[in-house]
Image 1: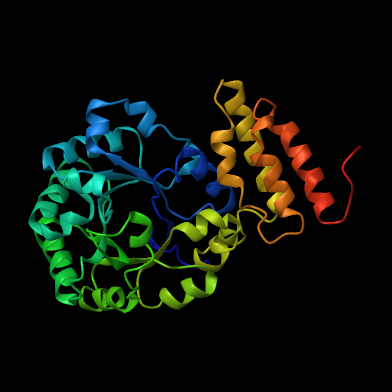
Image 2: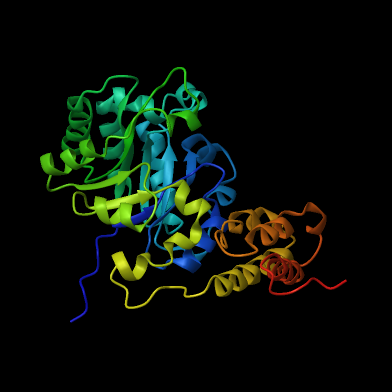
Length: 337
C-alpha cells in the first residue's frame, strides 16, 4: 500500500518580496512537484485598484500555489479572496508577519498581531467569500515582548472568532522599530520551541514552523513537533536543496528531478517562451543562479548568466556559453578561442 499523502502544508516555500514571482515558482516546481508554493505578498489595494492580471497571472504548472494578501479591511480582504478563487489559486494567506515600515503605514503585516480581533474579522470575511482554505502567517510576537501568552492568545482568538485552522508561524519576534526587514530576519532570536508549544496547546490546528530552516536535517528535526515546515531564503539561494523533498518528506515514489542539467534545460525552454512573447528572460534567469551551487565551475556558470551583455541573446545560446564556461572552470574543458 502506498504511503498516505501528507497534509497540504507539510513543506512549503515562503512568500518573499521581489523573489517568489511567477518565474521563480516555475523553477521551483521543476525541482519539487508537491511542495506548496506562495506568491509574493500582494496588497488588497493593488488588486482592487491596480492591474489584476499582472499580480495574479501564473502558470498552471505551479499548483499547489497560494496567494498571500496584505491588508486589514475585512471587506477588501473578502473581495480579494473572491479574486483568488476566480483565478484558481489553492489557498489565500493573510500576512501578519511583515515588519517593514511601509507595511506598518498601511496598518497591516506584523502590526496586526496587536489586533487579533481585527485579524479574526478579516479571516471570517474571507472564509465567507471563498471555499478556499484561508490561512494566517505571523510571528511569535512583536517588539521585545517575549511572552508566549501573546502568541497563544493571538492564535486562539483568530481560530475561535475567525475560524482559521492553519497558522504558519515565523519563530522570531518582529521588532517594529529600529530594525530593517533584513535585520528582522536575523537579529530577534529564533524560538522554535514556542511553535512546538502552540501545536501542543492547539492539537486540532495545523501549525507550520518557519524561520531559520536550512537543509533536510533541520526539516527532519522540526517535523515531529509540528504539522509542517516553511523554508525561505535557503530554498531560494540553494534551489537544488529541494530536489529530495518529494521522496523523503512528501510521499512520492521518486523525486521530481534527478539532474540539475535537466532542470536548467527545462527552465531555459520556459525562458525561450518568454522571449517569444517579447518578455525579458533575464527577469527569470536571476532565480536560477543558485542551481549549481557547490559544483565545480559553478562560479563561471553564474557569471555567464549574469552578464548583462548577453541579455539580447536567446536563452539557449546563453546556456551553451554558460555550460562551456562551467566546464572550463571545472578543468574539464576549454572555451573555444
